[in-house]
Amino acid sequence: MSKWMVKMKKADFDAIAGKFGINRITARLLTNRGLTTDEEIERFLSGDASMLHDPAQLADMEKGAEVMLHQISQGARIRVIGDYDVDGICSSYILVKGLELFGADVDCCLPDRVKDGYGLSIKLVDEAVAAGRDTIITCDNGIAAYEQIQHAKEAGLTVVVTDHHEVPFEESADGDREILPPADAVIDPKRRDGDSSFKEICGAVVAYKFLQMMARLSGREQEDEVTAFFEEMLIFAGIATVCDVMELRDENRIIVKESLKRIAHTSNAGLKALINVNGLDAGNMSAYHYGFVIGPCLNATGRLDLASRALSLFMENDVNEAAIMAQNLKDMNDSRKTLTVQGVNAAIAEIDKMAAEGELPKVLVVYLPDVQESIAGIIAGRIKEKYYRPTIILTNGEEGAKGSGRSIESYDMYKALSACKELFTKFGGHKMAAGLSLPVENIDILRKRLNEQCTLTEEDFVPVLKVDMVLPFKYADMDFVRELEMLEPFGNGNEKPLFVQKDVRLLSGRVLGKNRNCGKYRVCDETGRACDMMYFGDLDNFNQFLECEFGKDGVEELYSGDVRKPMTIKAAFYPNINSYMGRESIQLVMSDFAKNTP
Image (cartoon, rainbow, N blue to C red; front, top):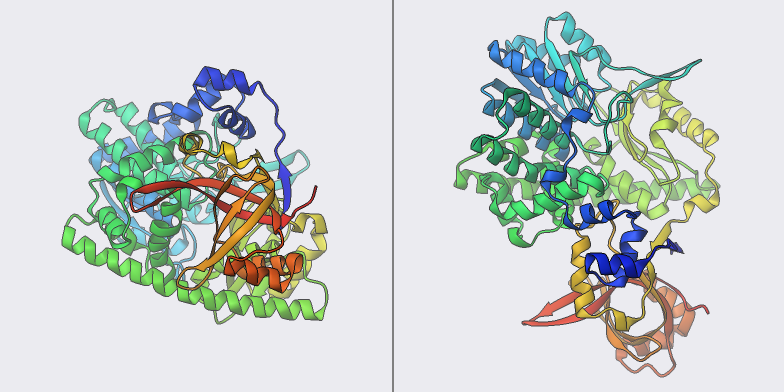
């Protein structure tokens, strides 16, 4: 269970509600999200694509666009080099189609996760030269590829970097100094010398903005073909934003909102096929479907095969061929799910051994030599969630150990790894996630160093559940729940509003689902207002909690529908609308539970 923290931000909620024609509770929810000015609230509620930040704010953006337009005018042979995750695939697709729009001779190469590793490599540069390519533009990588880009420049290539990852730095007497690769232009919102209003955009959005600048400099912004292109590509920028777990605030939220609005009208045969094969309704999709259905299918190609398969799906124009390719991607993802479960179980077994030998380490570094390296990041994420500790999962790579890390809010993983950088053959990432390669003999040294240098306390290992406010059931009516849709899309940085209520009385319960992993309960609050409540979390854990509080007999009575003694808990929940056979009703979805305290 988590530590609950009720947000207590203050504002004139009545004034906000009156000005924007919204419920007073909704006004408070906006304030809880840090929106205080009329401009911020208007942008949040009504923002559209016209409100995206000017691409000129990014350092080297104009310079990079001028370089690319010049290269195209000279008949240059351009190669886009992306990455094997969803952001890398989407940004590569956006760049290839965009450069074609401007008349470029362009092709694309996505690295093989196992053979090439992340991003630009010497091998990929040499392959570009061998293929007669004289210009490279990166997307979703390149900011840390100093040696590789120096090699490309020595070979006579023109190089433009578009990336969004942290800029490498070195410590000096005057403070940290950024180390930029020696490219003809280096575009990254994280650069200190830019004027970015919002730095937390993904690689696909950087690529999108790059093409916007090319359109501006070439005077083609108003052309129908160019306008239609940017409308379509906003869909892919939104998918990448969600799948790269960017915070859904500022322009990211607008991008995802506009993407979801447009996806039902996409002209892309491959994306349509992927939606269909997963049984989704394109007209009723959410950020959840991007992050947990579409994204994993695209990611599975880079994990179990080649990411170029996903890129080829987006490039495919034949509807029948696209349907076959989409089915292959879904099948691959189903296979990846099985491998992930096996890997997570293997990691838990290793961690159990650590715990048996003494105290659980503050930073979990787990070596699983037999696990496929491509799913190390997913396993790290699952383990981090289970133990709520920074987690690094390592497995065997082509040359030594290779893996991924996932962090918790109070631990800057990139900074921690930077302090051990001499142990790695390669590493990169940001505060919450990282990728790394190192000799196998350095694993124990890394584990020891990270834990010795870690300053986390036991308090940091208790996840904090941020609750918006106390909400009696009577306020969760149909009008209010519909108004909550104005706050979508929900996701990282714009989580679903979460409410709390004590004295929630459990009246009856049923276990549902094919795997009997979902609970449905009839509940009421202290006023007697009754409604249904669903729980999709760890049902065994919830039942153990109930047994501790009310005894085994109480739990049996709950599920038999014959509760004799009052069973009251404190519940954190989100209200939504349940539609069944044409009838709509309010139901609460419980996120967490606790002992009913005064």
